[in-house]
Length: 498
Image (cartoon, rainbow, N blue to C red; front, top):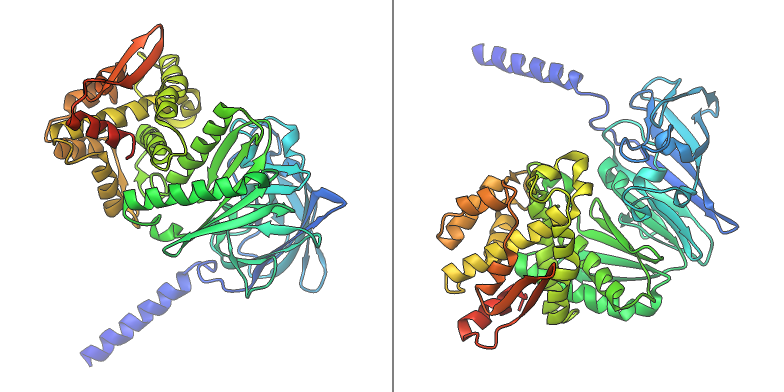
């Protein structure tokens, strides 16, 4: 009797808990978005969405478009909603790209609206590459620019496109039932942290160990073979370095990333979710081509250092961004996409020049300036200073261990410990690991150059192995020592990525 009473109590408790679960937790009703783009007016996207209301609020992404009073709604036209019987529902526009629909929760609605693609007529702090734009060969959108959402938890969202016959769509979602231009997003994150290109562009993919990298090339199709070679080489280098394909946290899993490259005058690149957008000039000079390769390889490495290995706070961005720069150079030199001279010239022409002229140098630490919106104002201190810290630490480890260990071990250990988890690291964690790796206490180094405001002595670090480096007339001059021994040559080879 006592046992029966306990079972009855537990069953009653289960029913009570079940009744308290929000209605949006296990919604399996069909949610769909249909995007129509007409060749005669490609700057107008017509969106038809269908879903069960989880509440009465419709909304767009809360981040970005701050320069407009209506935020992302600045580009929305003719929004309307109907119930399943075709009755028009009242919609009240609210501030910050939100709307209130006059209908009860759990009712299915059909929403329609238009997006006018005029984003490229305005200035954007991060560049147009992470927003939306049109080209003669098609249109580019990120999820935040065209999606009006409802609720916070939806799964298996169908996304379909109606486009001109000679167009194609490159999108990050999985194909749905092998239907052309029909996809299935896993959840709202997969839907909103996305980008797509629809047009007459070229497409190819590279696959490794269940991971697929899909490229869309707009206006740069002539460089298709070189991009494919670059992608394969960099991908193989990163997989070997880290010990596997990207491994993000459980709630952000992905097996596919898209890289959308379009021709344009302004060289830029952006990662959104697990996907990369780049704009480059295919007819640019050698320096522009080198920077284009660098941007791609940098953003690509973030799938590991940034998406699989996650920071506790933005104050750790010196490592996420700076050390990513270091491995970007190593990867490109390893696959001979750049020469040793290119490597050394980039250290000076890009990183040292930006580092020495950063307004925060000598006033704030590379951690402090990474807080909030300050990060964008201190590229040199974070991206350049962080690179120099990573390089100095790599050199230190190699010297202290007779080149038997390196920063590569730290990267693999971080990937092994943090990849596939929600765990995050701090600068203190990195300092402890680097002390263990080198066998030499790194407290003073971190106190001076990472937590502190002193200039990283990159020329001293480089000169301590088989290189000669000096600051001369504001330039970081680097060359190989003619008198370097085999051990020093081996360490130089290591920092070059060989």
